[in-house]
Image 1 (cartoon, chains in turn yellow, purple):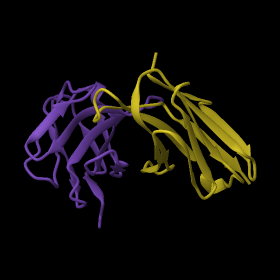
Image 2 (cartoon, rainbow over the protein chains, first blue to last red):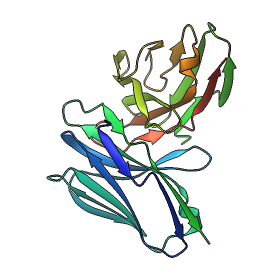
Image 3 (cartoon, rainbow over the protein chains, first blue to last red):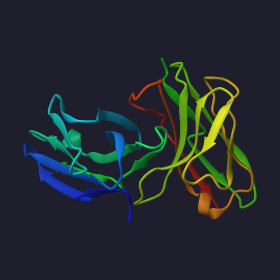
Length: 110
Length: 112
């Protein structure tokens, strides 16, 4: 069993829909990251959070430390949001060891 | 700033050949990482470094070696390539503290 589980694996939405991607983890962490991998393969960091909620434009990330769960929300989705979204956790025991989920492939249709 | 750069972008190796994947960052980050990404799987940490002269193993270090002689460069060496090392390799760096990681564009390696 992976330490980091994401759901769903694949998600297809119509433009304008509200999107939620979930991430559950099984170990103590010092921080959780949400990453975006573009169709061309490049990876960019969207959020790093250790508590509460963060918002950048149409993207919102939340984390519940007690429940070991995080969600990434996209409001008013757009075809340019189509990408793989990856959840990663930095382990509390070794600050340099990050464990990654397998990713959620999002396709937003016009 | 160029950020994190990796060379080559693509490479095909024969079994038993060796090669070095190059990674350079110009952000003066102390922490650098090498990951591999296999289809349908999450990225896995191969090696990492917390500063020049210091390296340590990650989750999947077998078959690889690294060195860190300068802050900027963190090359990954494959000595005897095997088909199981076919993957996409990403280098990343981050500043001291719990900041975000910056990823390179990746190297797609095929071992036949």
